Amino acid sequence: MGSRRTARECAMHILYTMDVCRVPKQEAENSFWQTKNYSNDVVSFATELIDGTAGNLDEIDGLLREIAENWELARMAGVDRAILRNASYELLCTP
Image 1 (cartoon, rainbow, N blue to C red):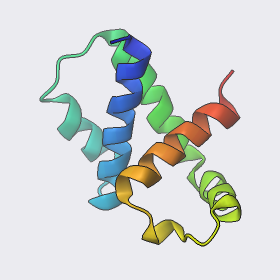
Image 2 (image 1 turned 45 degrees about the vertical axis):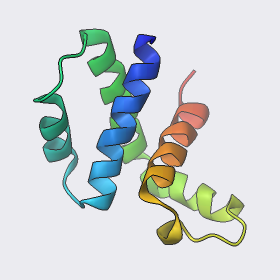
Image 3 (image 1 turned 180 degrees about the horizontal axis):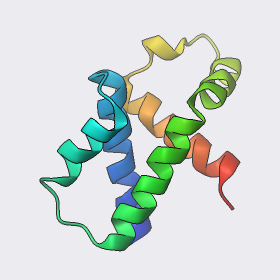
């Protein structure tokens, strides 16, 4: 599995924890990384995705609300929200 794919999965797990468990970003990251052993490339890219998604969350959620027909963000499954938020950040804000 490629390091970018792995980093996206890690970011999704951390974003999910932040959202569903309502814990601060630093706590979610510390909890996740302390039991894992990933390369620096994976950790670096995952952290970039997490920081970017969290930093643009209001804008991303606003866009998701606009395009989600017959769905409210709160009704979506937590995993789906994390994936959509992460993907939206990467598509909208990264080269």
